[in-house]
Image (cartoon, rainbow over all chains, first blue to last red; front, side):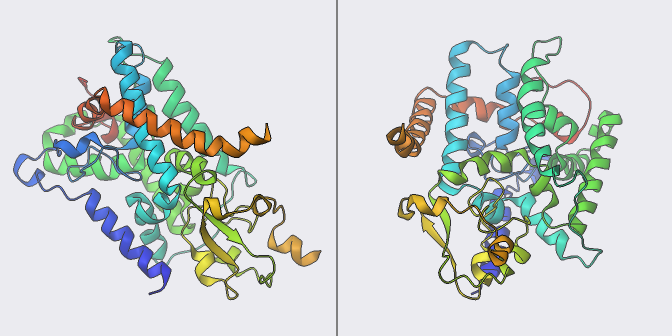
Amino acid sequence: MKIFKLRNYIQLASTFLQNSSFDFLKTKGIYTGFLKSFCGAGLNCYSCPMALFSCPLGILQHLFSSLRILPWQPLLNAFLYSLGSIFLLSLLLGRFICGWLCPFGFFQDLLYRIPFWKKRLTFLRGKERFLKYGLLILLVILLPALYITEIGYGLLWFCKYFCPAGTLEAGYFNLLLQPTLAKGIGKIFFLKSFLLFLIIFFCLVDRRFFCKNLCPLGLIYGIFNGVGLFRLRWEKKSCTLCGVCERVCPMNLTIPKNLNSVECIRCLNCLTTCPTKSIHLVKSFQLSPEHDKIPQNIRELKNA
Amino acid sequence: MKKFLKFSPILVWLMIVLFLIFGILNQGHKFVFSRGTILCLSCMGLEGDENF
């Protein structure tokens, strides 16, 4: 079976597994069982009535927003457990989570399959990738930690004002189940709905637009691409510099320079389509240090 | 310095596993459970009081 077909099946299975609570049919509320003690893999809102696991990004914001209200000991324990579980998953899989397990990533892949005007979107001279750094630092860490309400608790800024997964999975779904919640609809709901439809439009046009430019969770997973279990290795000897790998990369990466960068979502499209099989997936300890010293991309090598 | 850099991934692994073990032993998962089981109005984009 070709890898990209297998990847689609795994994405489907993961989306279903992470959203397979049917308690809402009885309770009209969210799942409140034991599995909510664990963070899920990828962006999947925990307030979605079908979600089994907690959202790692939501939990991180809760941690930072609880800084001033929780006593230090429970806060430290919460920090150790949450960071430990999120980082351990990142170390084990890195951005494989984005490419293979994330429900919102799967949603974007499905959107891109819809026939529509297709283009690589660059609107800040190629610097738009850095937006996710700003979102992580500002909306996930700094603002929840620094801005507090009158009860001393911070706000979940990313969830409240930005997260498209929350609007889609939790917002509309819960409003359908519990129409009384509609009294809470206000400017923020319209802002989030506008952002959601804008992101859906951009994902129709450009592959994985949200992952590429806006996802702070993908950035956290990506930081561990360099020290995780698996890495990609490029063989200079057998490479014919045809450039197919760069054309099939959904993240528009320069190869081989960015094979193990923060941006690579490990979809393995490059590995599958390479006609000379010059890209391999290897365990980190099988790599020699020389393999990390590959500064060129395919075009530069061709011109050399 | 080179030796330190060579072993830094192992240190990262060790540190994170220790984080998780200490977190579990000290009931850190209760925090995640308590937050994950509340219907989050912020996530939905709705306005109102949330009691954590």
